[in-house]
Length: 207
Image (cartoon, rainbow, N blue to C red; front, side, top):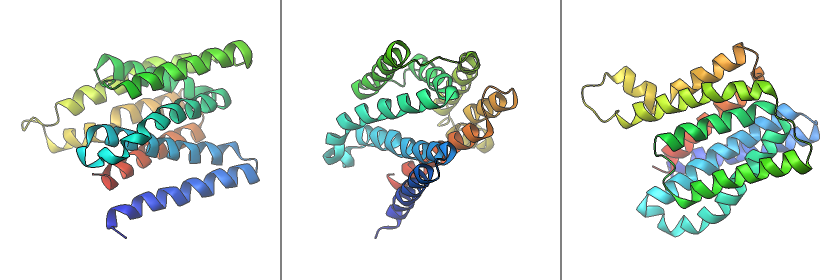
């Protein structure tokens, strides 16, 4: 097995274990973390399939991923209030920095909005005010990360600053602030950080 495959296999085992454990023990926290790890893998994989020519043969997966991702995020937003605010804020940051540059991403965002509207109108979803408060924090964090990430290639930037934006620490800091302010619980922060770790592991594995 190639060395790069170990990370993906490890993610798959962890995702399966956490989601199954969550259903067996009726633990929303375990399921949340497992699904967030899955999302980190799916989103970064779709990104790589779009951008990297060597993954051209896998581009057939982009269409189902563009459907599965918003459905999964919609489910999480229905079960966990803070997810809505984090997703909307992050999406706004990505849109305003020009990162939503492929039809699959546009379909995913539109799909998520449609799912939320359906859940509000027919599923009894009530969007918590604390979730609304998360939106500006997530937007600022995402916007700062994407702008900084674009400038990482400039040789004048210190290595520490490059590392900060390469791993998108501004959004992580925003998530911590939202947790400290009580807009989200610790388990939501853990799930978000696990999403980020899975995203990075997938990026390294598919590099």
